[in-house]
Amino acid sequence: MDEEFSAFYRSTVRPLVGFLIHQGAALPVAADIAQDTMTKAYQRWTELHDPRAWVHTVASRALVRTIAAVREDLVEQVPESTSLLARPDAVAEWEGRYDVLPVLQSLPSRQRQVLAWTLAGYTPSDIADQLGLSAETVRGNLAKARRAAVAYLKKREEKQ
Image 1: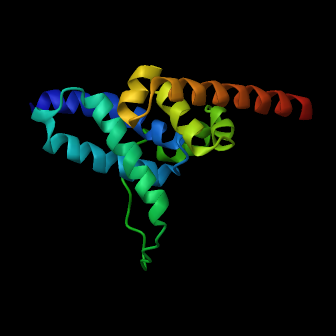
Image 2: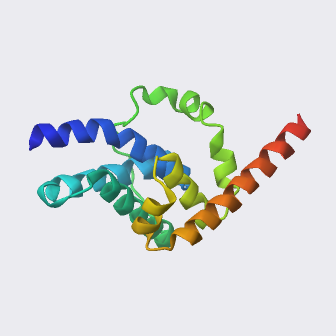
């Protein structure tokens, strides 16, 4: 069981962080949520039928709760963090490879959420099941998100 979970963790945690960033999370928040979600997945490992979908759903919901909570915990010193990136000093380089982030940030939250699930490899039907929406609603939001992304990119090209 430990080896199976370990392989799942290694193949899933970084894409999960990216998935949360695509939904609007800052890197440290995304990393924390991904780590907490993976801990919960390990605790329920034998019960999970589709672990990848489960961690995406749990992480997405945790992000929504985090955004809604907006509270500060002040500390005198920030503890040393353990990075989920291979090279923590390469955050700017990593973000630079993801030109989609400004596009995603310009979208309304539901469109951003649906597009993030799509970028994570889920179909509209899968997304509908995970978010408790109809497939038509997901497809509609995905179409709107794509149109908005095209408009954003055209506008950006015109400025250059």
